[in-house]
Length: 596
Ligand code: SF4
Image 1 (tube, rainbow, N blue to C red):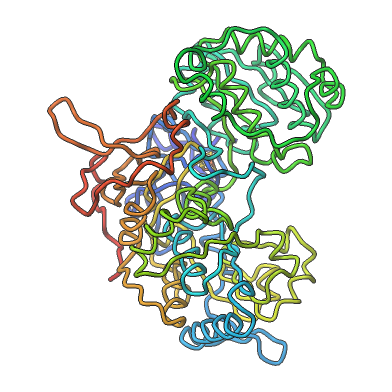
Image 2: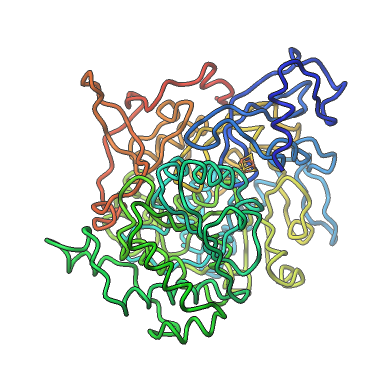
């Protein structure tokens, strides 16, 4: 799955790729620096376009993420850009059939029908399902549209199962970083297979092993990494959460020295900041191990290894949190890292390996029924007030809205779906019960086939914006080609729907939206497109001073104990603006492609 790197590295061009052979000369290509949109690693790429067709993606080395490698999926899976199946015109249902229409008619109809249903049945009769594939700016605008244009918190997306977050709690994220794996003494893969799901992380783990790290694989199925592991522990499929619970129970039941973080002053408060225990099978590690079909002694040895580790990273796949046993997996994994002292230093930490390119960005931007952008609870009055000041006085509702499953189960009368295909998760026939269904997508998906209005969107190579990868790194996405005629970027479509709903948005482009995000989302504080530079920044964004005294924005390679205790959403936003100091030098051509 890494064979394409051979073609890219061939110094004389003797090794070529079938898909580009005889398609054009390299010097005819227009190269645009951007980010791969195929998984949550967010490898840096050069998008090569010839005659408005994406020909290939080449690597753009970022040692903090990809080390200059791409997997073949990211390099070659470009069908979505060039597919003849792409939607090129808005569609409305007339006489039971989807018929082409104009953008004006489609947007007016969407605005009218959403407003009508909200007026007659109340704002709670409308909901929205957002995407893990659209940019941060588009996810932010989507929830803003629902919260201010309709007045509902019925907004969600397809995501893993994470415990409820109290106001200010640390979000359930990877507390370390990809580059930090180089500094790890131990790496534990719990229910994760990066080779299949996040391939470049697999390469980074191999690199860490060469540097001396020990790998411990804890999965229900064999992995290709097994042969490089110092220890392999197997359990029954679907029991990942029980294994994590058993590890936590073992730590609690055996006398281990408390890690320095939890000793000394603030120790009791430190314990109270530990992830909540969301219930489930209690206490007895032996019983839990029996339930999971795993050897207790193997888990006990793992706990001892973690307690003695210099810096261990524990990674689980977000997908495992959706298993029936996975509801508390995220909390237990973080607790295991904290209680064994593997937190707050380079190479240590815990967290999920996410699946889609902007899985984390969708959460950060508040595509959640109970959390506003930046993990601020909808019940947080100060947080709502901060948004209202930026949103022209429109305050989001204080009551949590309906989640993904509840909306699809008929909890709303009108549903607006952006960049998602929930027909994969529910009986597609159930989608026909909505009074009004809008779908915004690149293709006539199963969900779109049942819609009343379909709005054609564009792919990431056709627009500007930003994605946030699985390790909290916010990176700029750049438009590499002219958008498909007839289709529009999601942020533009949302602007059109906002106008039809009577909202006065005045964004000139995604840069304006990101600047607003930098003003209202504490973990993205101060962020602007320019500040993202060529390499991006890991949130929470902070101010740092250079040796020469200059102030600049800096990312956080790993979350610290202070951040965990304070809760990242409680930090005040920085003063910001276009004059915000740059995180790293912008790329040549930065700002091109912005629409006016
Ligand atoms: Fe793209 Fe993911 Fe492969 Fe990187 S690992 S090239 S982001 S698909």
